Length: 306
Image 1 (cartoon, helix red, strand yellow):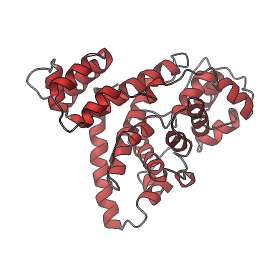
Image 2 (image 1 turned 60 degrees about the vertical axis):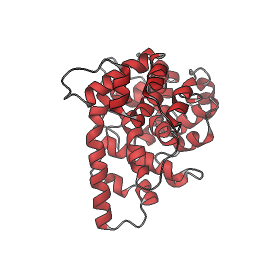
Image 3 (image 1 turned 90 degrees about the vertical axis):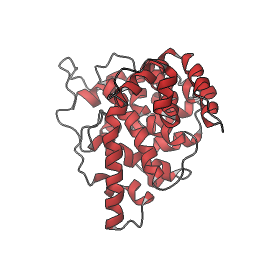
């Protein structure tokens, strides 16, 4: 696990559900989940999209502007001179990546505020893991169905929100779980239940429920390690599980879970069986190659976002 020489050896007291719920009341809310850049989202979804209009809306958000310019200059690093003009950046990136940025930026900023910086946890790498999982969730789902809206991106982005809630509301338990173990546990969720009394998936769902987040996200967060239990959105929960495993196995960012994953892990998980129940060996190979190409692109994209 992550080491911390100042970590106390005094074990935390395991909490019951009522104690956990009471403590969660003090967690900050995530206003971005209720309104994700609505003006820009509507414009991007319009039949006619004008670069100048998109650029004008982006200019209203300094953080989004900065990420946009970082992203375009990292993705198109071979250009003869850096892009400093928002209209040019919009032209080069295209609508899909602008939509991703418009959604990622406010959510990540809210999550950063909620997590704070008092745990010594590698949060920047954690954000990279979350964004990479969001991007890969879309890649996985694109193989089985056409996506409308941003539900899959948001689901992938917030799948580990329970870890952020844990760091915010239960810092001592969080440190014991993520800093206090001599070796990575085989089952991180079991360790969370043993020390805190609830794993991060259930904690995340409980937190989102208290924040009045749409039920679809609550279910997906709760079952992103167990998509067979999802009733309303099993395919999205399955895609998040597959994406999470792919990103962890590729060592893109850090989720805090350091248990070893093999290349076959994602093809043996329940999510894969839900999404591709009848895949032949040949079809699996084609799908695997496509997902590998998508994974290879993600580190470059992340450099411009976080």
